[in-house]
Length: 113
Image 1 (cartoon, rainbow, N blue to C red):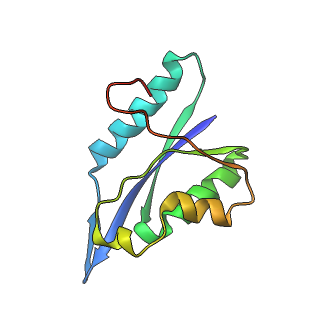
Image 2 (tube, rainbow, N blue to C red):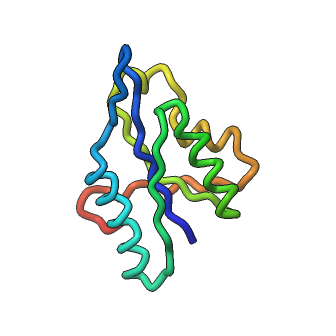
């Protein structure tokens, strides 16, 4: 099983801006991998880079490379104004994917994931 985290960037005028730092992205991925390992599930983690508009394609491409079926997506919380106008990443992947997509809800605060 594979876990993918996309370190997204956006372009503002002529500047590439990462939406999270590399250490934070690695920490998110490492925590996800550790959670599965703690449950006795063997997983590998991969971090990829992509512009915000490329994130759904990056996920779908990785899923095809991993031969994922089903593809499980966790919530993605965007707080930018662009989120009001763009489709959510989960929606974009689900609508274009030929792979079964399972949307996993986020656990309420205080409950284990």
